[in-house]
Length: 270
Length: 308
Image (cartoon, rainbow over all chains, first blue to last red; front, side, top):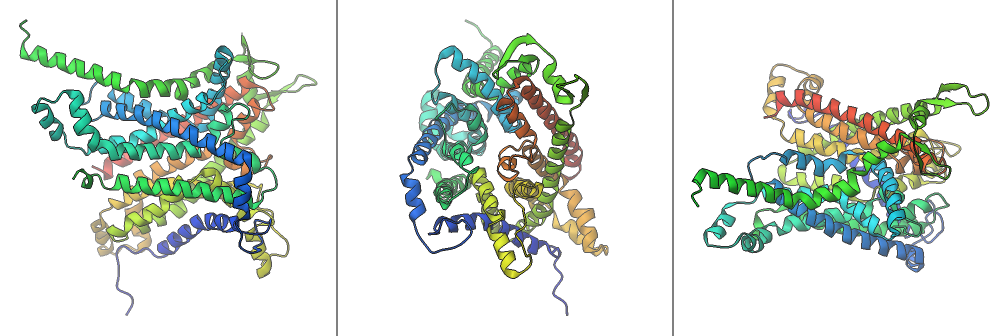
């Protein structure tokens, strides 16, 4: 007898899927493995060592770029999350009103414009502003990062709001809470996981950005990704693997927390 | 004051809408100033004359747009079509389409595999797909570079096995760009496909088998038409960023194998021809808009028949 007939089975599909998962992780796994290579090569294994992590740690350029990345990502993520939270409150849990679809589309617009075009536009715009104001600090990078992070922060906050029950806020209003108090003591605590998820998403997105940063940054404002992009043109040592590994771990940690935050919308109000 | 209840209700509603505009103002303003507003300046710049050290001269000029399509010979002033630009645009479209097809070929079985797992396992598989998506794109590109470089792992393994006698040049070719773009964009295809496949009604497939359909026919005539909205959404999500890639061709294509994104960057860097760069950017946006339009029209058609 042949195997029992399953209507869900399509021959070869599971094999291709397994292969895809394998290929998805093989390059990353190799990259991480060679970060621990004691030799100079990124292809010949010469034994385990932490020397490249040490080298990266002692490389002032790497540390400076990392600190700058974290600074920009923190400010941009907070700014984007505040804007996104307010916008989400303004575009959910109401009958459709004039302009709501426009707002929704406009907030998501940065996702649709090719990044390279936005980068060029910001380069042109900010190069003017720099001449007018004489200011050439990190503010430009923070602003542009915040702008493209808004749609990412908006997504989980909006989702959370839409799954929330209006009756609790109505109850608060019935008990003579002012709109602000109802928001502060009822809506905000319920919305918090969504806000946190949005904040993390925005943080990771900002941390990862290469293209817009590459065009907007002034001299000496390399972030970790643009520093790495510059290095990739030269002969690469496992130091790059070490930097990448640490970077991957940070992203992974944030994304894992995000995953659990956005997974349980109903359990955590107890 | 004798406001009727209806009037009061209307006033309250008006205030509510005004409050909602106030609430969304910061987000809209931020995106306008540091996101999409400057795009209008790009359009303006595409009609100005290039300055001698980059930037522009404030006078109207159609040179930027002229240079997108035509090239003027420096010596005898003859005008010919800008072959270099056309070939880069054509290559970019070919590579982006190739990426989309490859992502569909590998993404569809993967999404199907995830959708047919028991429900409590699915989120784990999905998580495995999304992890690479949230890790830095540059790092993933770098990982591919390491793997396929001449003295990289793939070449050394193939050499040891005796499959090849000399290292194969894979890095800095179109193959490398295609591989990198497929690798980086695959999750964008799997996720919308999964969303469609998850809703798939397997009773329809059962019915097809009852009517003696072969597995191939079930796949092509039942499953694929049903998940068409997901397939189109995934294709657009892959095609648009692939077409406007900048980092991947720069890292994996070396300096020679340019795509539109690199051509644009060139005009703002060494080329010092900002109006041409601006005109090329607008051209890219127009191509993307057409792709979106195609999506909206087809998703409307496909969505109507299979989803409520």
